[in-house]
Length: 74
Image (tube, rainbow, N blue to C red):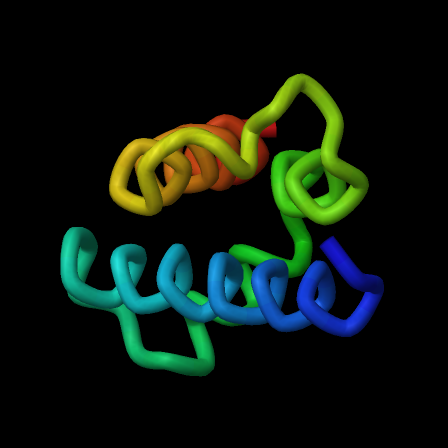
């Protein structure tokens, strides 16, 4: 995989997760984007840690949402 195709894959993955956050939790695009990029999980996905990029977009959206809810409790 070239560096360019890797970046394209990551951008598409991020966009799909953000779309799932909108669809699953009724968020605006801005809210979902902020939640995604503020999450630790997004950093792990983009760094290719633990093969999270292999998980479904819906699953990753739910993980990021749970992480967001936990941060709201603190």
